[in-house]
Length: 246
Picture 1 (cartoon, rainbow, N blue to C red):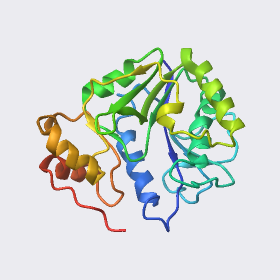
Picture 2: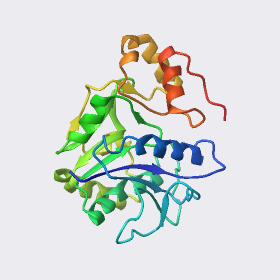
Picture 3: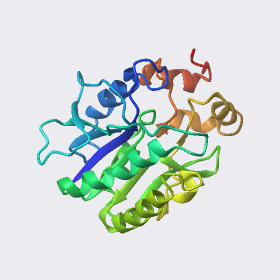
């Protein structure tokens, strides 16, 4: 199935959390794996940020008829940001815009991998590439909820996406509940091993409850911007994760 990979973004050179390094790292990582994921392009859907011209084509608030780059940043000309822990209209707008990209360029599958989440294993890579129906996500053992940061949305579920988009837009991009509860997944895949291990609370829980799984990780998430992905994985597997300096 014709597929693309996307993440949401809010590029800001003055933000430790949303520094360009974060997004350049994601681009470097998935550019090397895009074929194995069964995709042909990477998109970053940006909430009115700035920068990124050195590593991607910038599409300013409009999708061109033809794409000229493998890596593209679609940038809204306004920022909606995040108003509270549960009220994040900027993320919702960027996430929901992915269906416009799919329809504009004839994609049959949307692969959502957030900018601080990384596929580590061949078996997860193969799962993503081979998925051809439904709306699938992974699973957080720590939080016991669907992992919204890694999703595969196939064409037969685009109608569900349309319904979700209409609902969220009517709420001014504040549906009043977490995305984990709002998104109508048809399949929550619990087989793959991983979690938001960049969060020290999640990592501590894993070291206590799931230590035997640490050497079999299929994915990692919520990785700090300051370290390379490979170094983060090494630290996590050794159980020596430190808090990033802010």
